[in-house]
Image: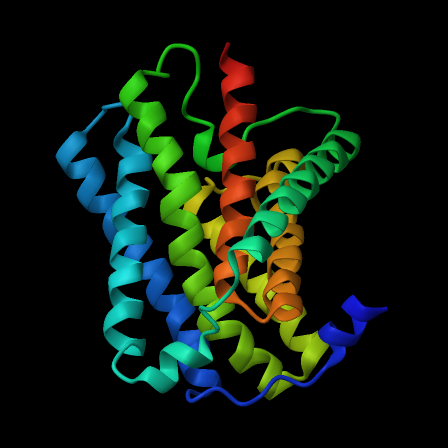
Length: 241
């Protein structure tokens, strides 16, 4: 009941509007596209090319947020970057359990045990140590910081204030799922790949948004996302071993 009460509570108006929230998601996607072009151009067929490319995109996204939102203390405070160390530890442990539960759900729905789309290129032939290092940095550092700053730090408060508590949360999660489908997955009509590329990120986005709302901390959402990324890397390692 306490969780539902938090999720149903109105969101205070952030110092930016709905347009800024939506625009931040679009810019984040553009940054991933730019990073992909730069990384693949520089590295070519290197197995680490894609994770490094997406890392570049994440770094550009963080730079965009830093330049656009840290200009005033009010903006940074409104992004809810505060949290206690104890809360973060509990969030990390609980989020690891949620990641496992969602993976079990995915296995039940699809009857297939697949890696995250970002890690699908790391098969037995291409799984070099540098590629795994790049993948770890992408999933556990790059994506959690960049995506949570944009989706839970900027977009979520704007969407919940403009659309309402629950509609804003759902729209943010849907935008997160679409972002992952477009940025990290190849176009496909395969329902299994669509589940892993779109539906599963949507569910993860719901949880991460709930963490941000319940704790009042975007930093907690970043830590939760890090736990998800760590589980994804460990899972992918088991699939290629």
